[in-house]
Image (cartoon, rainbow, N blue to C red; front, side, top):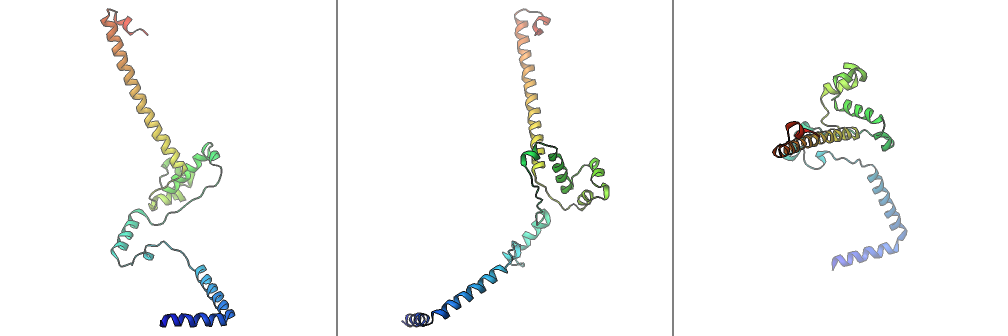
Length: 182
């Protein structure tokens, strides 16, 4: 019952001084808003776990192996124009440069052995680059590989069918030339 009396007295006091209660509520809301706006969000590992924990150390080893912070490069423009024009080659070149995997033959056009692409390659800090140029290039390579496999299979099937037809023609008594004629 003490809690009920205390809350009753507090409610009665608030009812007798409504302006004070409203002013107090507004000042508390303003202080909370100012505090919230001064916060800076962070996804750093030490905001989730103690830096002395086993999990934190494992995360740091992971970062050393695979990299920590991604770098995002935004290319704006029409996707259709990008994909269906020479812009895709430029984007693929940019992705190659940023990845440090630019072919040696392309280095002279990209600043030479002392240019930014060569410096990125020497630093060896980039683990992976993902982008539309890389995606389209990889897709084209995979499609080409599959078409080559299917073409080889079709040629093997055609050769096998030719042997079957030739053997059947020879079995019917046709000459070798007649059996192979189209």
